[in-house]
Image (cartoon, rainbow, N blue to C red):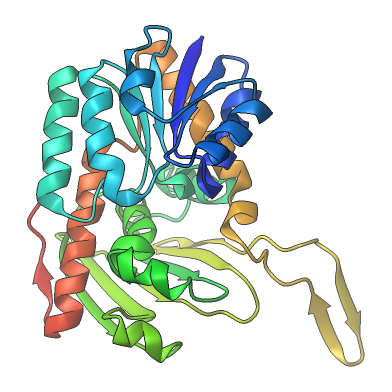
Length: 331
């Protein structure tokens, strides 16, 4: 039985808490948050203990796993503490906004030899997973192009933008990880172009809200990622891969599969409007994969090195967008 300490009782923490509590081989042991009221509320909902001290939670010998769902700037400290305590680790992305700090945490994880999954949940989406598996099976022949579309229904609050690390480290990092996963070989060059077209306040805060990144591998395969902070029709999440023998597509998840056809045209539901709804199945699947890996002793995936490489690509995209030049990737 995996007995988990959850750090962070916010929105994503609540999703993970529910998935832990429902899993047959796991139990939510404790919830830690600086906001004690939030910790108490979430803990009581799942029969767990509410705490305000991470050190107290990690000192408990019953706890053998830690789920880090706190703010990004706390991830490194908690990763190091959890690794040094010998706990299995499930951590929300990104590891950190600073590569040197991320490397410090990874060194401790490797030293402790504990499993550490970085929660790039989109790898576990059923449609994206099938597309990936079909691609690897040779269903469309030799891969030539990957196209990833990711657009939010509306921009996040400005206060969040100011501490997010920027669109590339906050939003596109998911798609950069997805590109690595689908390409099957590391990108060696990246070019990014970005603008502020949705909200001028985002630009004044030093960020962008619209971006396109092109990645190229040593064999010449390319991936194109398109991001926007605004899609008036809903949360737009699509993937297309082109190979020598055909194409694979994974489309949006709609509210229902009902469509209306008449003389005026064809109408259907919009895509789901929020990531927690769109990726509900992915969140459950990634948790199940983590539990299975810990129980069997098999490597977790995506791991801390995957988290590091996605951050390297996000940093390169930030640099390229500012300089207007392609960047050679150095991992």
